[in-house]
Amino acid sequence: MRRALDDAGLDLLFRAARTQNGWLDTPVTDEQLRQIYALMRMGPTSANCCPARLVFVRTPEAKARLLPALSPGNVDKTRAAPVTAIIGYDTRFHELLPKLFPHRPEMADNFAKNAALAETTAFRNGTLQGAYFMIAVRALGLDCGGMSGFDNAKVDAEFFPDGRVKSNFLCNVGHGDPAKVMARLPRLPFEEACTLL
Amino acid sequence: MRRALDDAGLDLLFRAARTQNGWLDTPVTDEQLRQIYALMRMGPTSANCCPARLVFVRTPEAKARLLPALSPGNVDKTRAAPVTAIIGYDTRFHELLPKLFPHRPEMADNFAKNAALAETTAFRNGTLQGAYFMIAVRALGLDCGGMSGFDNAKVDAEFFPDGRVKSNFLCNVGHGDPAKVMARLPRLPFEEACTLL
Image (cartoon, rainbow over all chains, first blue to last red):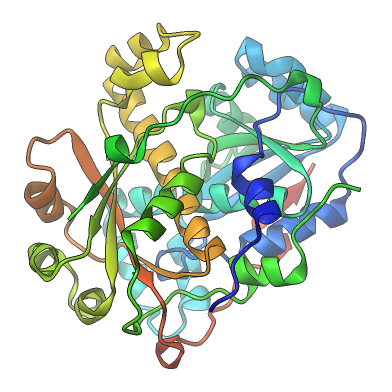
């Protein structure tokens, strides 16, 4: 029988893990951010295209550039978080395919010629990598809190002014304050979300 | 110190896990598919919108409906896989928000009034859930192999004829044949994908 995660591991990643809305003062080190990336980058992407690009906003100066783009409900928790990751995707990811997919470098042409395919591929695979990021954070014993409530265009203008990278979502990282976790919301039962054929 | 996954757990999910291109005869039970879904559904989505919808293609008859939509390189491995999941997203996910986000049911109106926001939200969060699916498969000791190489319109016409659900990507599930795993492709170093601010 193949090894699987034990109950404590499944709890850590999925069953007991919760989106965090408040943060303790415990810092997150740059070494921890490197460990998170070292894990998340191993997750699968189509043709190994790896389009995700991350900006780790750590300092008060960098936070001050980010906060004006946030929905009001996301400001305080983002200010309090040790790190806020801007998870973006490289719209010109295909220029790196000769390095990332070296046995078929001509794959790059498919994307260079088809802007809609490139956009969909970058968004889909950059988002998969964003999920790997959140799972990696939890796997390493940290907490996360993803956020879509912000003005993508403002973030892009401030952090990606040359237009190559587009913001996807934000994710606070740190040690969550258990007192600020909200009640668990319901999930869809198997029969409502899944079909067996 | 908070619990984290041990090295064996990190290997299982990320470091030693590999996309599979061939499959052993070992079956995948419906109970295992329910266990996968029970884990993946706990992963975070924006406003708990949970837009992913899964079709588990298990029987030869159902496989025969799927295979004509695949790129040639994906046919044999999909035929051999015990299960192929069609990971789709519900374009009208917001109709379920009064149940999934009951403290602010008016959130549904934001999406009903803005088709572009609804599409982006469904695709982003359905893709996050697709990544949770692949991690859950691995966490339970099974293997997966995601695929984007197929004709989405053909899959949609065959499996989602009323147009409400759109296919996102496919994922074979089972026990992989180690002899058919490809060489590990390179990943981007931290400095190329990440910025510390």
